Image 1 (tube, rainbow, N blue to C red):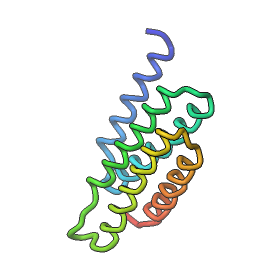
Image 2 (spheres, helix red, strand yellow; image 1 turned 90 degrees about the vertical axis):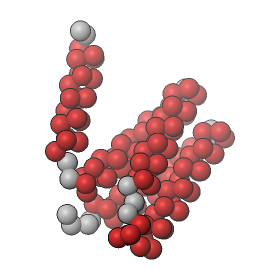
Image 3 (cartoon, rainbow, N blue to C red; image 1 turned 180 degrees about the vertical axis):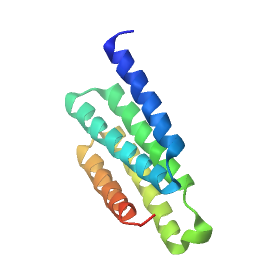
Length: 126
């Protein structure tokens, strides 16, 4: 096994351990962190003209946003959950557009929106 493969295996095991031990609050934070990471990498791929990689990374970000939508609790979250659902839907639509139009400004817009949501989530006491 080469060093890169070993590092990836270590990261996979480390992430699995983090997920297993994480609170529901932390799991949402991890999803948001993962989404922001995918968006940053997608932006880099877009800058380099790596169309396939860009599409793959945007697809992962859309999936993560879908996971955030699925985690919403409409019973307890009320209007906030409804608003977040609409925002996540908007983000996913905008990411599809960013991918189709190869538009970095849209990626930046969604990144800023997700950062804002994450900032609010991070401020919630567990």
